[in-house]
Length: 132
Image (cartoon, rainbow, N blue to C red; front, side, top):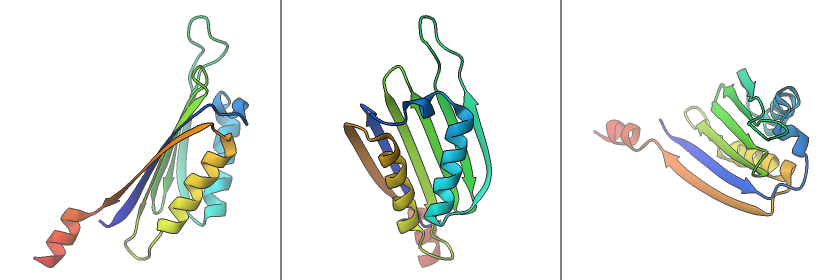
């Protein structure tokens, strides 16, 4: 299946630190950003980890199942860092710009000092099968 898989590791997050520990608010924010990006949320699960020994609070892991594929977010409040993963299929239409807009919005939400982004074009096997 042709698609675009985007990841971002962000650190030194200066804004919205409360989202890193509040699963309910992070869920609501992610669902809003998914909708604003033009993608379609089908389901979601967000889990708030308990505080580790000597820490004020734990992080949050969340996934949003998209009609187009998925969003995953993992927060690390003790490191002031977040990892992001957005994958979209481009089966019936090219959703790449929507995926880029979503990951950009999520990065901007936290205003990180450092960002490491990667992009992976998916679907080589599907393209080879169609060509055969």
